Image (cartoon, rainbow, N blue to C red; front, side):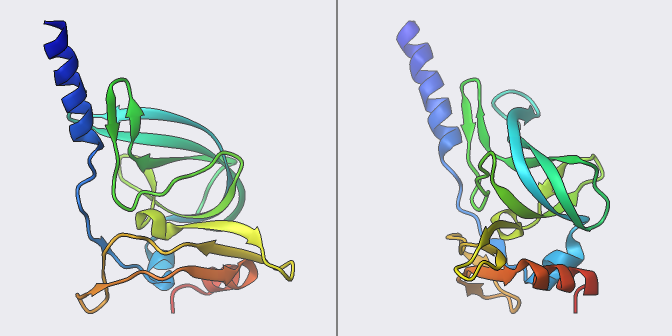
Amino acid sequence: MLCRKTLATDLAVMYLTVASGATLQYLSMDDMIAKSTAIVRGRVGASSVSMDGPAGRGTIYTHYSVQVLEVLKGAAGGSVDVAVPGGALRNFRQTFAGAPTLRAGNEYVFFLWTSRTGLTQIIGLSQGLFTIQSDSGGKVVASRAASGEPMIGPNGGLISDQPRSIPLDELRARIKGGAK
């Protein structure tokens, strides 16, 4: 009896850990600026995990507390709760193609979208998360690696994502000017 229960639990965990193939919609910088309800520069703090829906059938979210260092668009308080799909809770693990990985203590620019229910997520998954760092000349730059997921381009065909990098001052000006 114990072996069957353990096997059933192991199979359920394996099923939930397999990420289904997904194709993401490519978002240009202007798309992300226009569609975001808020854009902030912030530092990641503590994280927690929750499940939306019944155990074993709901969606697991990892929630990150983000200390807001600068508001670039919209309104935000001193901190914001950012939900990223996926994580581990009890005997369940879920992964989602394109979901970013956040590291406590790291500083990012977050392109955020808040639903009517109040859940705040990163727009375009990993597309809307830029790491803040200094380049070799000391200029502060927002950048992200290319997503390894297939993407649908503006003309409806499949495209490969490219890494993106933009000086933080230029990004501020672009956001302030709105999507062009």
